[in-house]
Image (tube, rainbow, N blue to C red; front, top):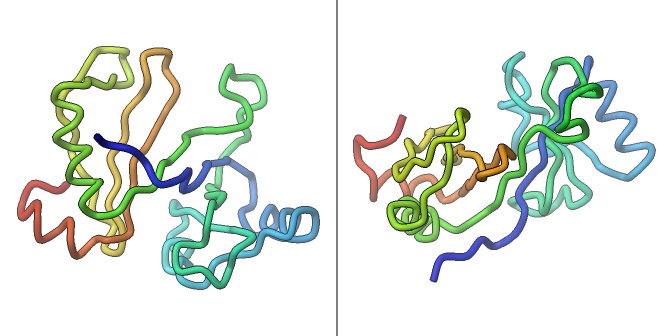
Length: 153
């Protein structure tokens, strides 16, 4: 049976990622994760922060993206919830959705997802039937890459 390991990260849009990271560090003890600074170097990438900086995966993280906060939208407060799995679990999830469909942004059921290769991680993106944006991610990228071959996006 497929199951997730934990919530990996929750995405927030903030006007300035570094300023927001300082606030979260001062207020909640969440600090930038050195192992993901390469993602933050991309202006469109996330600045990953966590209270567990010494952990390889960082524990549960916040992903700070540059953008306007979504105060006036029904999803104010979060953009997407990402669930972490191991490499075999990621591949299993790709098969799992064939019999347990998820939804696309239009609310249509889909039974196939295109994995996104972020070099050190893989993710797939989808919605629940109520429009909440979700992600399944793994940091066992080499395993997934070996299993998928050319099927990743």
